[in-house]
Image (cartoon, rainbow, N blue to C red; front, side, top):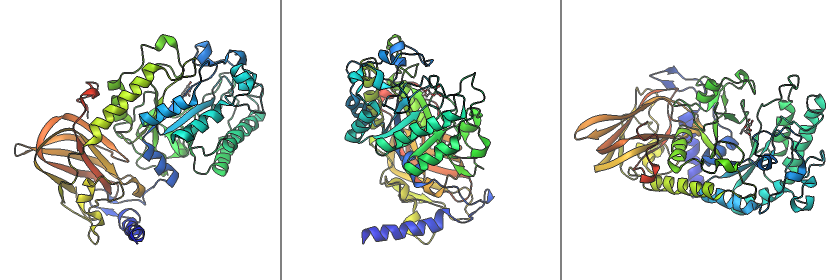
Length: 486
Ligand code: FUL
C-alpha cells in the first residue's frame, strides 16, 4: 500500500515538476529537459569510485610500456584482490575499475586472442586470471566492478590495421561475458604517433557493450554515458552541466574547457567523471612513496569533483607485491573518516523552511522536503515564480561553514544561478554565489553563526526541482587546502 502511494506521488511529481515545457519568468519558455537514463542516475549516486592501474609498468617503473616487455617480469609476490576491494569498500569507493589492458597491450586475463598476457607470466605459474580474481573480490566486498581496455595497444601486431578493431572487439567480448556484471567500461582516445591511420571502431565496440552489459556506463571524451572532465587533476568546472552535445566532441581531440563545463544547451545527458591519481603517476613507483596526496589535498579534490556535480574516479595503484601501499591505504582511511565527520550532522535537518513560491496541488513540493535527508522528496516553485527563494529558520544561532545543495536530476539539471545567504546578527550576509548545482553542489565558506539561511534561485532553465539543502561544520582534519574558496 505504502509502495503504491509512493509510486503515485512520484508520478504526480514527474507530471508536475520536470516534463513538458515549463514557463519560467526568468528565462522564458524552457526546452524539454534532458534527463539521465537509469544507469546514469545510478552511476551519479556512486559519487566516489576508484581506479586500479596495474600491469608490466609496475615492474618496469614506467608510466607507458612500449609493448616489448616480457610477460616474465609480471610477478606480484603477495597479490591480494581482497585487499584492494576491501580497502575500496572501507574508503567509500563504490566501483573498482581495473586496467585489464593498458597501452603496452599486456592482458591481466588469459585472453585467447594473444600470448601477451598473464598466461605467460610466472604469476601463479601462468594459470592465474587477475581480472577474474578482482571481479570476485569486488563481489565479495560489495564493490561494483569495471574495466579499462586501452584501445591503444603497442604490442598487438594487427594494431594500425582494420583487423585490430576486430581484435579489440573480441577482447571486449571476453571481458563482458566471463566476469559477471560490469558497472563501467572505460575507453580513452590515446593513439600511437605512427598509427595516425588507425580509426577506432567505437560504434561497434559500444554496440557490443550495450548488447552484452546494458546496465554498464561507457566512459570516453564523448560518453556516450559518462564524459571525461577535461583534466587529470580531478577538478570539475565551477560551472558544470551534466548535459553536452556528443556530436561536438571527437574522442582524443576534445576541447577540455567544453568537457569541464558541459553545455546547458546540450541535448545529451553525459555527466562528468573526474579522474586523478592518489600519487603523481597512474602506476606505482617506489620513488613516489613520499608523494602520496595528503588527506587535505584529497578532501579538496572531493569538493572540486563530487562537490561540483562530478563523480570522483580516484586511482590507487598497487605496488610490486600486488598490494595497495600502506601510505595510500592510510590516506584513503583518513579521507573517509574526515568526510564522514564533516557530513555526519546536518545542522539544517528537521528545521522549519518556508518558500516565496511553492508548486501548489501537492504537499510533495513543500520546502521542508529539502531538510528531510531524502533525495526522493522535492521542493519546486510555481511556473511563474521569479527568483524563488527558500528560507530556513534554524531556531537559534548555529555555526557552520559548509553547505550542500542538490537538484533532483531525474527531472533534469536546471539551476543556472543561485545565492546562499545567512542571517547574521539581524543582517543578511552572502555566503556563496554560484552557477550550477546539479546532482550535488558543496560550498565552503568561513564559519558563520547564523539564525537563518536563504537560498535564492536567480536563474534556471525552466522550473527548478531541488531535493536538499544541508548545513555542516567541517572536520578539523579537512585542513587548510581550499578552505576559503567557494
Ligand atoms: C590516459 C592514459 O594515457 C594514462 O596512462 C592513464 O591510464 C589515464 C587514466 O588515461 O589516457
